[in-house]
Amino acid sequence: MDVSFADEIEKVISGLTIGQALLKVTTKPDDSELAPIVVKVDLVKHEPKREDIFSFDYAPAPETGRVTRIDFKEVINPILEYIDVPDVTVQKILHELVRRGGSATAGEIFNAIPLTRENRQNNSKNAG
Image 1 (cartoon, helix red, strand yellow):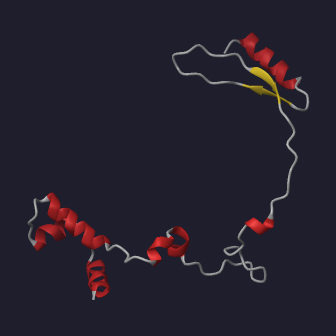
Image 2 (image 1 turned 60 degrees about the vertical axis):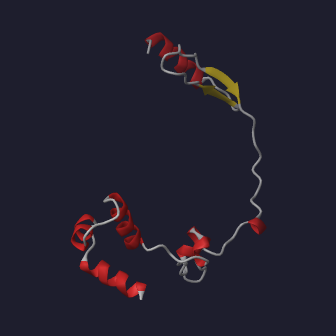
């Protein structure tokens, strides 16, 4: 940046009054740069939030200061309440079968999908 231009910007910034701001508009890399502009800023009065439209269901309990137990499935994706939760292991197996053209041995699938013994046992318990 040009030193004289930097000094000029510093003078402008230090001379701004209440309700004024220095606005620098960025351009595309191949366009010429625009000079900063002094703009007026309107004061926006603060309006208190309407508490009747906010939910305090998940706020910390006032007496303990701790958050109560939350069912994250309900909060993040409420549709999961009405459908069966997808089994990721089954999806991975089906994906591997499709990737291999529709047929594979159990050893090929287990080598292609990184599952621990505990994951395999937990998935078999959940399936039954």
